[in-house]
Amino acid sequence: MFLRSHGRKKDGKDHTYWSLVETVCTPDGPRQKTLCYLGELNSSAQARWLTAVEVFNEQGETQQLKLFPSHVEPPPDGPQVARVLLNKVRLERTRQFGACFVGLEIWKRLELDRFFEQAVDNEPADVPWSRIAALLAVNRLCAPGSELAIEQRWYPSTALDDLLQIEEGKINDTRLYRCLDRILPHKTKLERHLKNRYGELFGAEFDVLLYDLTSTYVEGAAEKNPMVRRGYSRDHRPDCEQLVIALIMNHEGFPFSYETFNGNRSDVSTMETILRMVERKYGKARRIWVFDRGIVSEENLAAIRKRDGQYLTGTPRNQMKQFEAELLKEDWTQVRPEVEIKKVAIPEGEATYILCRTSGRKEKEKAIRNRFSNSMETALKGLEKAIAAGRLKDRNKMERRLGKIQARHPQVNDLYDVDLKDTADGVRLCWQIKEDRKNWCESREGAYLLRTNLKAETAEQLWSKYMQLTEAEASFRALKSELSIRPLFHQLEPRVKAHVMVAFLGYALWVTLKHLLKRRTPIVPRPSVSGVENAEPMTPMKAIALLSTLQSADIVLPTTDGRQIRLRRITEPTAEQKSLLRQLGISLPDHLQFHHDCSADSAIA
Figure 1 (cartoon, one colour):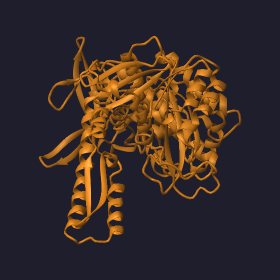
Figure 2 (cartoon, one colour):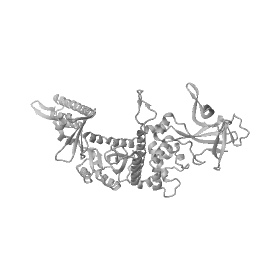
Figure 3 (cartoon, helix red, strand yellow):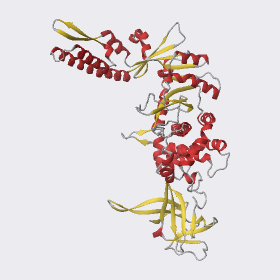
Figure 4 (cartoon, one colour):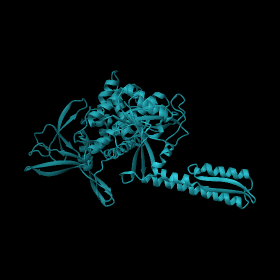
């Protein structure tokens, strides 16, 4: 490893720049790899190889040293001179920097640092609790893990000790757990704070609210937590105790509020609780609620109307039977190449219905029906053949086998008229397709029904508004995949709720990063696989992955007089990283500085 000089002529003057270079072995032979750029090390044309480096001594006092290679003779009038042994220059203490730095910058942009300073820093502590809260949220965004994993693996590999100004050895799982206990009581104030900041930063409005629920599972018995119960698992883990999470957001995906429910709580029973909770936190307002058919009931819709609210919701499929005649008509409106809709008003009711039909969904449902129909017909033919050949003579066994066939095919069982008939030659299995049922299924495939009490909007506007529910689904995917809210390892109810709160904070950082990336036009277009430039905004996780390669490290420069000059610097970002940072409006610091024991340039004798 050695220092290399680079000459450049600028404005008629000669300039010398320096970089730290390492020789590496490759299949093609030795190559020189640039580790980082040190910049211009000259102070004048007369002493172009000198630079003034501010360092700390062991007593914490600063001094200026002039740095240059050991093979160059120093000027006779240079009292503060450090001759560097180039063959002993090394790089130490590499840390993940880029992703953590951006996560912390978004934390500050949301003013969460000020919020938690006022909320939890009222008591003296070795490490301010607001900084521990920032650490937990940034971890949830960058590399989600348990508190023990943060202490043992993730935190020591990051530059957060420098960024958050935390002394060495102060982070452990106990301190992280205690932070969870302190931030949980501030849930309501936090939701209000974030709602206001989203409005200030992005002009976000919350007159249309998307409401959806999901579940997560708990590892362990959690006997002391009354909230976790056996219930419906959306993660296909019915063997575990469940916790239900309700999330409210606006149509752009900005979270408005969240709530946790017992694991055996049905979706339809949560609406009244959510309405009261929103009124308590944000007051009464004429809000529009958008939710899917799993939350629909006449009682819930009446509760919204009672509060002068409006709703747009899906409906159970069995309600489509009353619109069979409308499904068969050809007066559909094409709103997308694959989507058809029509508005249907019922004179005696105040609700309006919107019939929707998509070609992709129709093909999918038709393929599912054909697969189950073919399977059931094959099974019926096999039973019919066994009875006709005399291999199956006991009528009770025939009925049991027939019952098993029908139980295995509940999706299409009502399409077939099946019976065991006694004839002169014995028992025969008779079956045929119910043509009226088949025609009804074919007309219904690909269709779904929306219900609303909104009057002024067109069918296309209502359909577009309902499709915004995909934002809620995307948020749950982010919470479960990128932010790893599942599974829950905490066994106590307050800790489980605090874990969900940290995931909510991580999602706040995630959705803010998403909209920062979406709002700004990419400066450097990204080529696609086909070679065509792709102007689509980068996803938050791709941005985090790209920035995670930015490192902070110590450049150690041994000198001929036995000292070591330690410079803490950040690696040079690539062109794509620079472009991304410009998009986010974030500038990297020139160097990291805290104090001489933790994170500062230093000279050690």
